[in-house]
Length: 293
Length: 87
Image (tube, rainbow over all chains, first blue to last red; front, top):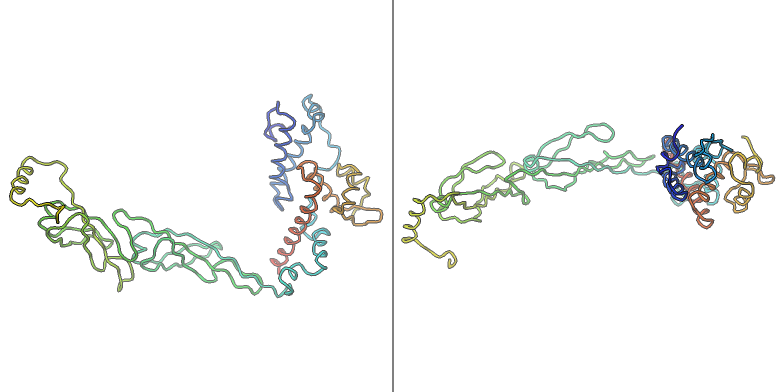
């Protein structure tokens, strides 16, 4: 025999008021009229109700605690739920329609439209899709599986940003009657790529260079989303100098944005004594005040 | 459909006769046959529900007709939507 205390989630020492409180909470959760058609909830509700019948009053509880057999006096906990008596057409649910003059429910709801003429558009469905940084910049084609199990080919336009929604007309829930099907919306989430960020059609990246390269300039290898390329750096650049690589940004092949490379001068981790001495010699000869420029 | 008098319905539902009579007077229960009155399975399921709501969930007499009205409205909508689905 199942333990009513356990079913109601209360200790054997619980006050009568706490038993009632717990029963109310569980009964509200599983009540068949609050869970129409849910057989599992109905079963749970019967269990909870039966448990409450066993220990819900001082008298019943004392009997149970003495180990006496519980006798159900009536069928209050049995029989169909109220919803069960109504869901195939009951007097009470129809009397609601009668209160409105006996007219068709939807006729009232939709201001005189005839039942068979009522058309509802289907609901829209929202999907989310992760897209690689490079795919978002250059465009791609992907296939997603819709709620109805069908595949949808999604063409990702080059240069798309995170948060953009692509609309697929008629790929949402079907409509009612002559109502058109809803639309499917695919929201794009662009996955980050280390070393790169997007600003509209431009791609930003940071390039660490040595102070020697900053002085002399030269050619330095730079990563782009198309692979590494050699970039010319003019002599005398500073941290924060922006250099533009044309046509290496996001967008369609014939109209791509640019890659903006932001330079960052990085000093060697350890300053060799010889380097320090060389710098001192240079300082004597070429010192300048950057705060006065 | 089997119909019961209040006394029989009271035994089946575990709800006292005078309470059922009050439910009828309040028009929360509209017996299928109002002259005797006779109650059918719909009435009895509703009596049990009202009893649970008032006796176990603490719904008061002011709130009861509102809850029942909304419930009837909801059940009616379920039915109508089901009809749409089938059509």
